[in-house]
Each structure stands twice: as structure tokens, then as C-alpha cells.
Image (cartoon, rainbow, N blue to C red; front, side, top):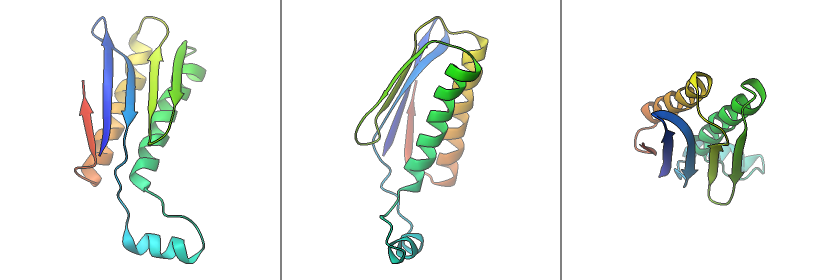
Length: 115
């Protein structure tokens, strides 16, 4: 299970933490992947990582916000604003939240979101 926790400051999103894995493997897809000599991929985790990195890049590069983030083993990512949140940061965090909800609709029971 992928656990996502959103943090708030002054009623606005101020960061998030992601940890865990979905351990979702499509047998047919992974059979094809293994036949090509490539390691199994958990593509729900890959999708979650992609939208999380999109949020961090959006905050830092597009929104020009000060962000602290770190990644680690087992799907861990922590991202926190190093300044007060505003409407731009809310837009990016809400986009991340909605993206995660949509991934979970497609593959139910793999993502748990906490606020």
C-alpha cells in the first residue's frame, strides 16, 4: 500500500510525504518485460513517483518556491515548503492530490491518502 500524507499550514497545503509500495504487477506485462531481460516494474509506484516529482519541479522551477525534499528507500519521498503556502502552491498540491485520486480510481486499493 502506498501511503500519502498531505501537510497543511494556515489552511493551505504545505507539503507531503509518500511511503510504501503498491506491489501491483500485471502478470502479462511483466512476463513480456522479463522476456526482454528487464526487471519487474511496479507501474502504480512509477505513476505516483512521476506525479510527485512533477509537483516538486512545478513548485521549484515554475512557481519559484523554496522547497525542501528528500527521497529514500521503499518509495519514500518528503516534500515541504520552506516558505508560507499561497494560491500557486495550493494549485500544484491539489493537482498532485487529484492525480493520486485518479490513479487510485484506475487501480483501487493501492493508495491511501491522509490529510
